[in-house]
Length: 115
Image 1 (spheres, helix red, strand yellow):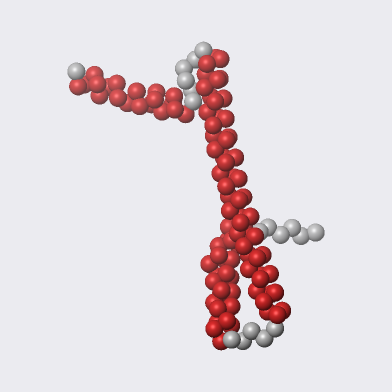
Image 2 (cartoon, rainbow, N blue to C red; image 1 turned 135 degrees about the horizontal axis):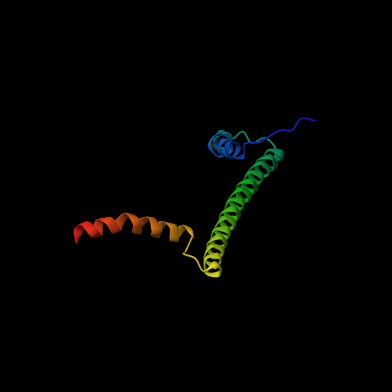
């Protein structure tokens, strides 16, 4: 059985940049020309644009969900780093602590030269 991989970013980009504007332009031209011939046309337009709206709302909701999860794990990682440093009784080995140590090691020689 063959497994198909979908590039969701590319699919979303194609839908938002090409498919939806083309459908809007076609529907607009049909409305301007007055070629509405059947109630089925109205049902088709309502169905297609409702489906596209639900797809875009779902995609935006998924992006917000991923952003919140990423922020949650970042906060959790920071708490774990500070907890581990406090429990071990060693210097702060979190990302912020390592940056401070690096900055301090670069600035100390400059201070010594300035004095």
